Length: 381
Image (cartoon, rainbow, N blue to C red; front, top):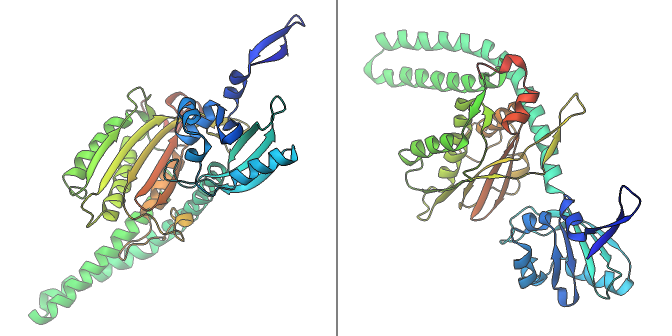
């Protein structure tokens, strides 16, 4: 099938319809009788995680969860012979993943009875990006709080610790446990303040071209010999991935934090597994604040574990400061991760369901990041 378009000389030129559909950023399906899939564009292949040939073979019933609102919607379109729109439809399933919230635009195809075109507009990406911008605002609020607390708390803490050490030298043996407790608790509070100070560090960060796979291999070595030694770690790398313009130490900090969280979630689980995945996913673009330019975020770095998942009530606030499900947690780890990724011009998101929790980082390529980089941050790269 081809579309008739006017050429430069006014003549009609045939353009394959599938080529036009593949140029569109949204998943599009053409569904025939018996809900057979007749055609699917490239965005649909990415959304459903299957090739067009596989989707045509399996049909819609095996692609979409049983009881999905999409099925009655198709019947309504066929009965009325008119287009119908339905908003915020959850199409999540074990096959295509969680958090698949979409708007559905379904319209009859006039060339044949019973044919329906279906366009899906994923809402999750835009909502996660909005949430990420909120996380950045929260991190900036903590930056001011951290700067104030660091100055106001650390000075008296050093005095308290010094006084406790003096008391310990003259205290009876049975009382020295209390003085040591004072020292340990002041050290713990000082450590917490040090972590909060990180949020207040607004100095430009030196960035260089970084091979993300070398960073992940370093993290794997540290994790396998330490906090994640009881879990299996697998890699699913795209070897053709270009370098990312980043601070290597900060990226190490990000992934060590994510893997440590995964390992703690897998504690006591005999089949615990952590997956490192990298991929190139064109299509996600963000506006740069204060300018009219837009930056693409095609580099995707993912950490996946098969633990119990993140509680539903915690998931929307996971990257907010002081939010944690750990009994002894501070709630600063993921907030710091979000700040670091945001400072690098990227975003981080989390999808979670039982037996599959996925932290996905999207970042610009080296060339795109270099175009937006402040000269002070360029370092020696």
